[in-house]
Amino acid sequence: QVQLVESGGGLVQAGGSLRLSCVDSGRTFRTYAMGWFRQAPGKEREFVAGISRTGGSTNYADSVKGRFTISRDNAKNTVHLQMVSLKAEDTAIYYCAADLTGLRVGVRTYEYDYWGQGTQVTVSS
Image 1 (tube, rainbow, N blue to C red):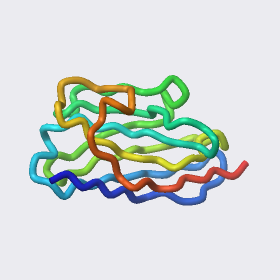
Image 2: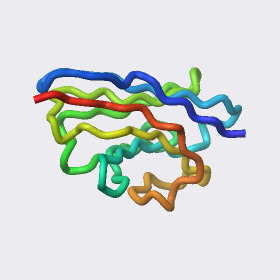
Image 3: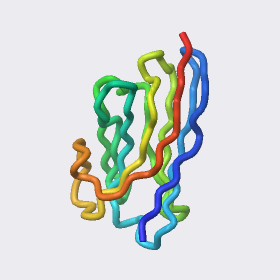
Image 4: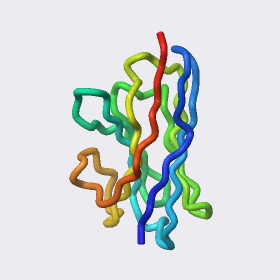
């Protein structure tokens, strides 16, 4: 069974950094593609970054390229999102998600099967 739990959110000043983590309690984490999405108040949930099941392939939204890095540790059932040079517009609830097919790094919400509860990231300007 897939159960995703995010952590690492918080309040940070513009230009600062945060590292989000997402842990899966299941036994087949290494077979999933994983993604990070975010949702700001009044906006739709949007893709941030994704990583293939081996970690060999990654994908990023244009708005975060060069600032965010997604990585995974299959031995620890964990996916991370390292965020640097944070901007006020990065403020949102961040969700990790699992694609059980693991065939590609999807960018659409419907391509993911399980979601965490989210962690709040607030960037003050």
